[in-house]
Length: 278
Image (cartoon, rainbow, N blue to C red):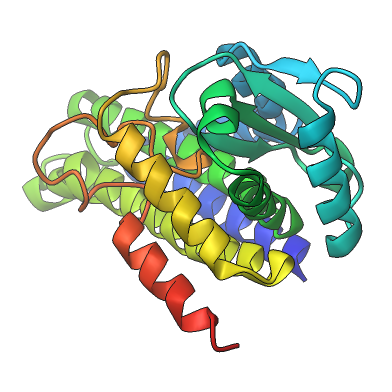
């Protein structure tokens, strides 16, 4: 069922991209957009995981080199009915973590050295359970495709400034306004909405997987407090949605929360509190 939802979203975003291409350059634009979307989805499906791991200099580890982390993940995957993912450690001080991969058999979990140093074993287990919940629901692929298509639509909007909006609408200022502003904004809102909802779902999945919502509550509070004082080196907006805590939390700019890929940590902790009675 989760795979079906993933493919449905990928298809919907692809059709939106193709339609937008048609708005800019008619049938030719639709054909070009279709070819571009097919190429982007192919690349995102098969290669985005290795690209992001390489970008953050993630180092592969196993039972011999990181026995504590390995045994936590092994225990949780058995409980969740998942195959063992590949494990990576990112040599950075900011405590953070993410999951990537196109399916259960090609999944990976990466944590920073800072996370392992800051959190207790129970809190690390809760964070890992959060990432495994993302894997279980195919969130990594959904987030990657949504970010890719949203970026591509923004790029098409820039082209629209020069090529207009189709044959009959070429001089229509309302259509041009939609091409340049409304569509990229709508695509970004879709991306952010998908990401925020998936974070809430992964938090709940982690709480149920560990049986201890308070472990994730305390872990999130620590991660958020630390992230407010630093930014993850080499972090970029295209991959920020993947992390358990937004790596740009410490960056001070207006309307940050409105356009954030993550819900507020306070809201996440509050939702976890409601699960304690369950």
